[in-house]
Length: 315
Image (cartoon, rainbow, N blue to C red; front, side, top):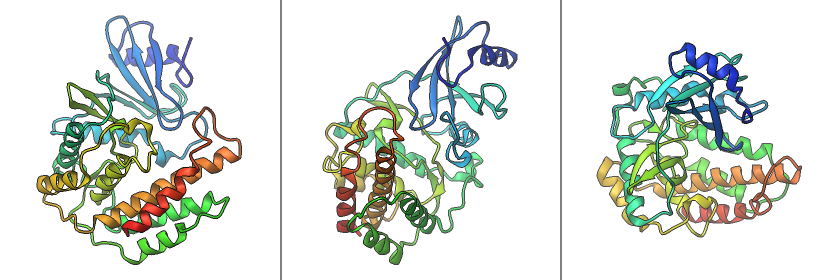
C-alpha cells in the first residue's frame, strides 16, 4: 500500500529512468505532516530518502524542495555533515508535488547531554564559518535588512492568528523593533537548528536535516534559537529533553570558534522568544478552530505567555 502522498508505481518508473532504482519500490513515512514529508524508499538492493511538501495547499516559499536540495548539495564537501543528494524533481506531475532524493543516513536523536550540546555547537560554528560564495551560495538570500524582515515577518504572522489577548507580546515586538542590532558578516543560516533536526551516532552529528528555512542572514539567530530550545523552563520541544550544557559555556565556545561578537545576544534571544511565541499561538489558534490533527495541541497555547515573559527579560 502506498504511503500518503507517494505514488510508488509512478515514482519507481521515474527513478528507474534516472538510473537510481530498479524494479518495484516499498516505502514508509518517517516524518508526519507538520513539515515536509519524509519517506524511506527501498528497491531490492538499496534504500534512499524521498522528501516532498506536506499534503494539500502550501506556500511554495515555505516548502521549497529546490532550496533544501541546493543547500545540502552545496555543503557536501564541507565540515557540516549533510546527507548526499542524488536527484531533484521539479515536475509536480510525477507524484503530485516536487520532491528530491537523498542518502539515508543511519542515526538517532538521543537525549541532550552537555557533550552533545558542545558537538552541536561545533557543527553550528562550522556552518557559520563557511563563506557562502565559497560553496556557490552567494545569492542564496538577502542578508541586508535580515533582522528587520524577521521582526516584521513574525509580527505579520501574529496579526494573522490573533484570537485572544496576549499580555506583553506587543511590548516585546516594540522593544525588538526599536533596538535592532547591527549584524556582522552574513552567514548561511539554518533557521531551525536543534537536536531534533539532526541525526546522531556515536555521540557525533552524522547529518543536519530540515533545511527548509535556510537562507543567508545573521547567524546569531541560529545560536539564540538553539539556546532557547534547550531551556527546560520553556519546554516547547519534547525532542530537546535531557541535560543542556551551561548556556554561558555554550556561548563562549561559539564565540571562540567563530570570532563573532555575542554582546547583543539578549536581543536575539528576545527575537527567538517572539518567533516561537507566534508559532505556538498560530498552532493554538488552529487548534481552537478544530484544524489540527493528532495529540499534543491542547497545551501548546500555554507556552505563549512563558515565551513572551522570557523575551521581555532578554531585550
